Structure formats: C-alpha cells, structure tokens
Length: 90
Image (cartoon, rainbow, N blue to C red):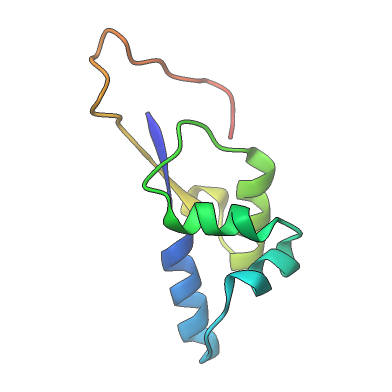
C-alpha cells in the first residue's frame, strides 16, 4: 500500500479559488511545515508511510479532510504474499 499525495491538485484548486498563485513558501509558513516537506508532498508519486501531523496540518490549511490530502493505492511492486497493511490511523 502506498499513500499518493494530492497536495499539488489542492494547491492548484486553492490558487484558482483565490484568483492568485499560492507558492510553496506560503503553505509552509501557514502550516509551520518545512518548505522541503511541502515540496516532497507536491512532487512525490507516493509514500510508504505518512506522518499524521503533516497530513492534518495540510488538511487544515486546504480546508479538507486528511483523506482528501492523500489517496491510498495498492503498491503493484509487491506480490500479495509480501504486502503488509497497517491498522494504525494516519
């Protein structure tokens, strides 16, 4: 299982709604997250794990649920026998 971030799309949507270009630096300042973290979340094709606090801060900034910040996708690289699933909330 992988977590695919939707931050790029959320940022585009928020920029369109506000009628201006919102920069990563602005998101970082508003959330208290490092700009490098925002960049990783915008440019990654997926994470094997996510930090709940990061997802929560991004969700709050964008005014969405944390479930809208990431999609949970199957990791095609692992065979069914080797896939592991976490029951912890992210």
